[in-house]
Image 1 (cartoon, rainbow, N blue to C red):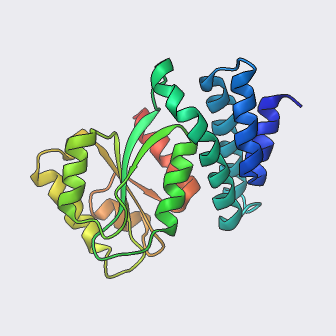
Image 2 (image 1 turned 120 degrees about the vertical axis):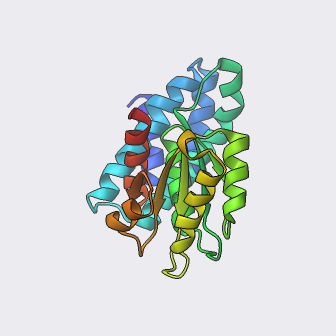
Length: 211
């Protein structure tokens, strides 16, 4: 197996130490950060996503794989600016106001990073105004809204309305997700897409960028 194949395998198995060591070795052997990112990390997370959607992998395995990816990314990230590598897109992400759940949001964020996105995670209990400020400051392509409680789902509509009132709704696409949501709910509040799970959220994010 080549180093890149070994890296993909380590990521799939969730071995953070091996993934980081292989990334460092690849750089020392003259491989570019872009090659290690696209051929190793992104390709590896793509496989994780496919197997997650098909039921081969479950949330714990995906979280472990995503953490391995982040360990490798920490080595590569300082080199991106130097080599002019641009992210495939920028995302502002957060759990809406009133909701403190973050496992799903964190998983989406890690998988988006694994797919080459630049992610700005605002955390949990994020007020609509904070999303507005972040969109103005970060100029993201996408805004991701998460909610786990049925009582906080309405804050997604409030947040989208806040983006509209601020005159910046047309500057970004909005994708929503969370256990109680449905496709119909997402469309009803004016979101551009609905991610039923973390893997599908990445698929939808890529689709929105391509539109």
